[in-house]
Length: 74
Image (cartoon, rainbow, N blue to C red):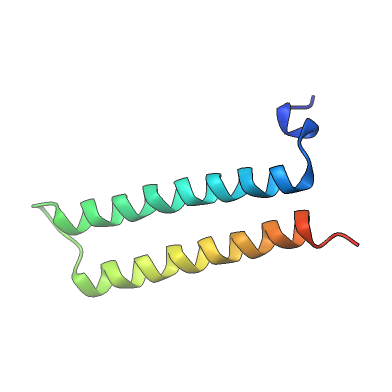
């Protein structure tokens, strides 16, 4: 079974993937901030920073993966 992305160009699929990765990053960042601000058992600033670095590294890796998949075709 195919979905609508089968009809998109590689460049369009790249930008769709970027939009999805950006949305994931925003959701994960919000969840970390909520965990840091909650009243019961909040995470420390240090733990929040570590988690933020991890999600940003994952986001960057996803951008590179999308670039290699859709834009670096020879």
